[in-house]
Length: 293
Ligand SMILES: NC(=O)c1ccc[n+]([C@@H]2O[C@H](COP(=O)([O-])OP(=O)(O)OC[C@H]3O[C@@H](n4cnc5c(N)ncnc54)[C@H](OP(=O)(O)O)[C@@H]3O)[C@@H](O)[C@H]2O)c1
Image 1 (cartoon, protein in one colour):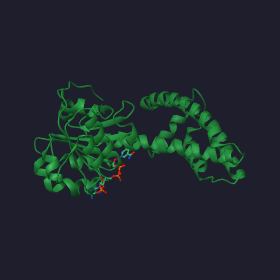
Image 2: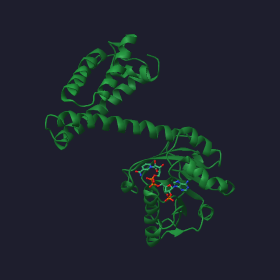
Image 3: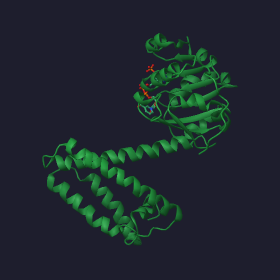
Image 4: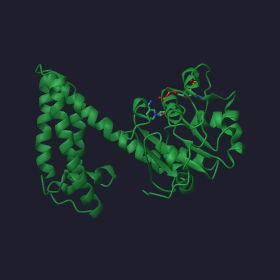
């Protein structure tokens, strides 16, 4: 991660290609911040609101691309980016392409070969939050491009740069989304379990949130253990966790709700214990995820 000197001090012209739910929010944030904003979308009609706010609709993707030295693209996937911008690659020379389309790290590295001034980005926010500091956006790729356009990118939220490997932003993206899905699955499973005992999800939610806040403390402590490669059971041993996991599986079965989620957690833990990690901390499960246990 880096904080670099920024040379983009004005409201530089920007192009936004792709006006889906997210693309519209990105373009609106640029318009609101005073950037001359050119937009384009495959299906016509999606730019009407933005035009009313001050954006300019380009007649084609090629025209949109040529209108600004900062070009932001936000489409469904990398295939759509290739299809839309591939024929106009030559026009990217001298421009910065910021790809905010979700994808894999390999796709990001492949697209970065299109231009030296490539930034791959991941948006950790929903459209409503774009333009506010709570939206966090992750970037990797050309350090010079990030340096040059940092102010503009910060119009969209809080921009963080992870370095020259264009694939890193995508990797952070999926790793963070995995945390979201894991947490939400655990909440939904818990809500189903308590629901079977006639407890509303809304009654359960504040306790879930309080516990998630405690878990963030565990993450920091375990990150330190992972980086040191040592997993002393300073809080609880893996075998203690396993014993309690079995209650979650049993309670789920007794309540007639799906046991797949807790059974998988139990199975992962049993693999670590079978590999000799019974007395280590929960962080030692990393060896299972690394494929070593
Ligand atoms: N929405 C979110 O909360 C959110 C959050 C973080 C990241 N993202 C990422 O942002 C990207 C866009 O998401 P979204 O929610 O805006 O999706 P969306 O509303 O479905 O919009 C998709 C956009 O891609 C365009 N598109 C799809 N295929 C195309 C093609 N072959 N050629 C040209 N344009 C094409 C669509 O154009 P048409 O209008 O012509 O169909 C539309 O502008 C995705 O990669 C998503 O993962 C979204």
